[in-house]
Amino acid sequence: MNAIRLTGPVTPDRLTVTDVPVPDVRPGWVRIRIKAFGVNESEVTSTKGQSSPDFSFPRILGIEGVGIIDAVPDGNDLKPGQKVATMMGGMGRAFDGSYAEYTLVPEGQVIPFDTDLPWETVGALPEMFQTAYGSLTTGLHLQPGQSLLIRGGTSTVGLSAAALAKDLGATVLSTTRRAERAQVLRDHGVDHPIVDDGKIADRVRELHPGGVDAALELVGGPALPDTLRAVRPGGTGCFTGSLADQWIIPDFNAFAVIPIGVRLTVYGGGAKDLPPAAFDHQLRSIAEGRLKPAIAKVYHGLGQIPQAHTDLATGGTPGKHVVVLD
Image (cartoon, rainbow, N blue to C red; front, side, top):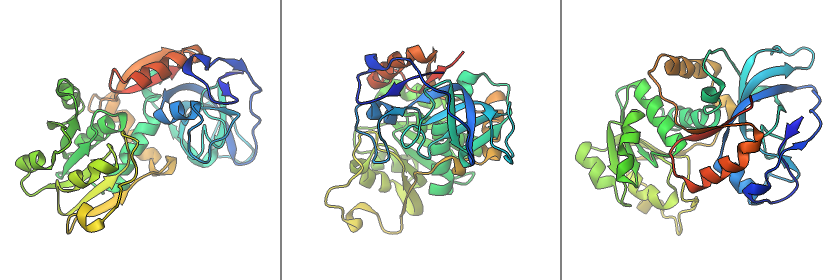
């Protein structure tokens, strides 16, 4: 099969297609014929040899993918021909991922679905919707009618969280550092775009004097104290991402960082946090026009992955970069 298999750190132009064996099915694992996948920042990091401790070379990258079940071991409830999504759980890091025509993944991280949406749409969803959904549910327990602040709103997870929260019935405030991207936020369900100059708590409280019910932190540790100051007593902040790649708050002092009465959680889950019923609801919401997936650009074929990595690194267009295997 064709795949992009790395034996060491490379620049984007060295992400070349090679021929590798199709993986054999084994107990507890299923083989998926990949139809589409999103390109992620963590994969760009992995090409530099700077990934998490579970990553090792040689490796086929790709932490998510959608496709069709190709083969399963005996006794498995999944059937060849089913449409499925998969993500995380060591995929593309501890074991080979989706930058290939076929991938082998643990059956526990497979989400069956049924939709007529094009592969380029579904391929954008698994990682960003799983992270957004898990943050809103496991991290924040967001309820209809509540208010949500998203710090780092034009990221793929930020745009997805806004769309999901609006579909739930929440009031959404979201930040961007560039005023010209306010309309992008509105297009994904944001009620109140806020230009982030590093200090946004006072602006948020002009809109919600008592503070918001929930806040999703995607910018990083240094922004967290200001984000939490925008949350009401009894409300919750969830630290999910760090666009600035700063996960640590230097000289952390809980009394200085966390306002009295405000709860702070974190989120970093996997496929099990996106139940098939929830994914099905999201797909139906997209098909019916209630939910807009954040897609920056679609690429066709493994040979376009170098361009996708380059485009992602430049950050010119908000949304997911999706590769479709025609």
